[in-house]
Length: 111
Image (cartoon, rainbow, N blue to C red; front, side):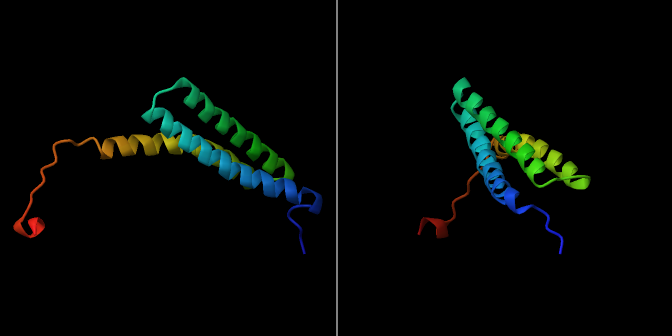
């Protein structure tokens, strides 16, 4: 049986994986918050979360001995985590930008 991660690297792999999730969520949350409430401090905090994410991915890649396509997946993941909140923000803005909506109230709605 092939052991993908050595036992001494198990906890490092586990905690770096958890840190990737938490740092990615922190980056997305702080990025969107910096758009709603423009503040350079919030935006800097978002980029600090992203830097933590990059470091956690680098540590996971080292601890799990990623090579070949797994290394490519790690790089794509880091790039995706950067651009996903930006794209989602633009999608939300464009989705909710139409202010010319016409609302029709029928007699059934009034009851």
